[in-house]
Image (cartoon, rainbow, N blue to C red; front, side, top):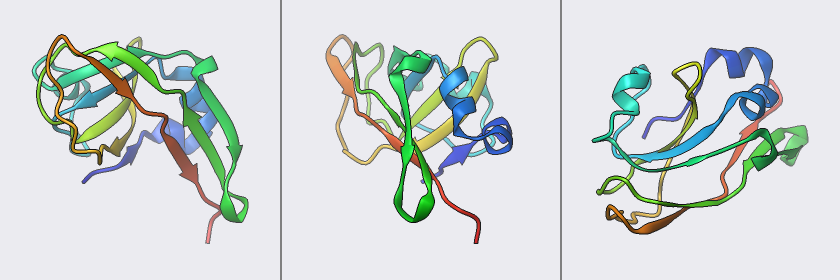
Length: 127
């Protein structure tokens, strides 16, 4: 399963993700290099929720790593299927800022409530 951080996040750190992510979405398919239009196509998104910088918390991880944790959000599903990834999105820039795998194997049905879980991303110290 693909995981990803946009070059802007890698260049500027996880605070860039906090400042620029305004949507979190569960999608049925994601591969590194997919375009924003492909990932956010209505047939691919099962559920999404609006995010603000206040929905993210920066913190400390193991071995002096830095973490960013998103708040959990409940939203009504707009699509159906088995999501494989969560994507962090900047809708204003039409950009995928990050992606991580969805491992719950929960099937989503359109029109039902679904909780996007709290997610923690870790940026480790260089080795």
